[in-house]
Image (cartoon, rainbow, N blue to C red; front, side, top):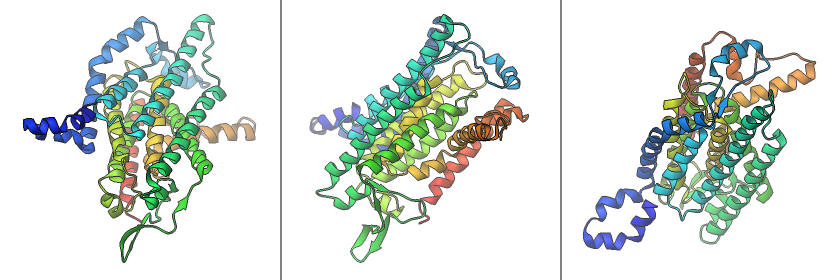
Length: 400
């Protein structure tokens, strides 16, 4: 909104001689950093009020696991208010409205992802909690296939829109860029090559058709959304790791859409015009998660629940799809990947072996908790691993 107002009033501000004071708002990198601060402040201001409201409504969680030792370790978390993800989602939404270019299609689709997945997660949380009050011992929210259907439906829509947007926007005047916006970006393979005429897209780009693009989008958005959801099981774990991942995506978004593509070419990443506006969304995620961590650090005063985790994962997956860094997201979000894989392996091995387990408990953070690590040790060590993976991923963008 501020960006759009500055652009609308640019000539008038120039005549008044004060445009220079507002010029920074036209720079995505400035607004991305400002989004971190503003989103953090929003959560900090409204945090206690929202927590009191959730407590008043008795929206508290009582985590139960199939492992008695784990139940004993987690019993002190009983009745901690959940659905705190409305704080993160609300801060991201408000910050984006204020600082992002609302005429940018990528921003509009991001807002759709945020609202859609926050609503799905919120309804799921509410159903779990209210069903428990109606029927003691019941914690049934959405069935897994119902939640998955909503996620896939969104991802299909997003995949079609982003793929078509790349064609409609770039094909005529910038055909090479149009190809790049819907091509597969593989680690250690060149996206750009230097020719006698200058930089040119690599002739080995693997261009994806509409349905191949959609399938990849579904895998990334639903996979990341569910992986963050699985990671949200300890005080500060999901919010801390999401902060690191979102910051890395903010940097990558700025590189991918910077100027006329010179920075993207220099660093050998896909050039996606206008995608640098997504850095504002990523910055809002960073600030929202940091603000939430203020209340979610051990001992947590509030949990984010599906309301926050589904939306955070979906948004980060969406940004990776737009800037064509789905595979790099696997490295940046390595903690999320490990958490999801631990559940898949545990369930699969349990069924195939007739009841045997690979891990003491899944997701992975519970395995280490039962192994003797304190909750704080698990969380901080996972933060450290996430930071190292993000640094590694950013370092590899030049290794082609």
